[in-house]
Image (spheres, rainbow, N blue to C red):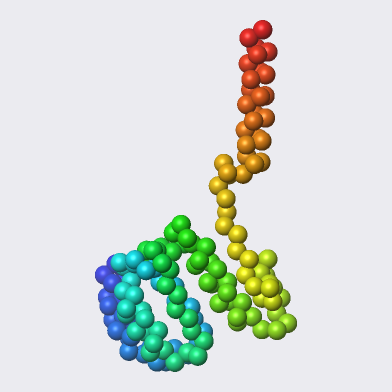
Length: 138
């Protein structure tokens, strides 16, 4: 199966470059600046050859191949949401907390230990366990 998959990739890799001018649908390409798996110059050349009138290419500074696992992955999510916001037609319902009229609001998750609620719970547990130990030792 692996040989078939690799063979297919090799055959179709050339077709992707050859028929780039046939691509006429909206698309967004996100590239990591330090990506060693995908050739950024080839991706940029393909992007330039497409005939789509709605196309964007965004380069994430300092990022490697797996963009969603980068420390600055908020840039990726924001780019995707902004690209989608431009495509939403009038009268379409917004999804989630996304509102095309006011823009994209992206909030990065904060680690649990940085939240006040976490420390309140830890403090209460510490006091409760201390109280139990004091009762047991009596």
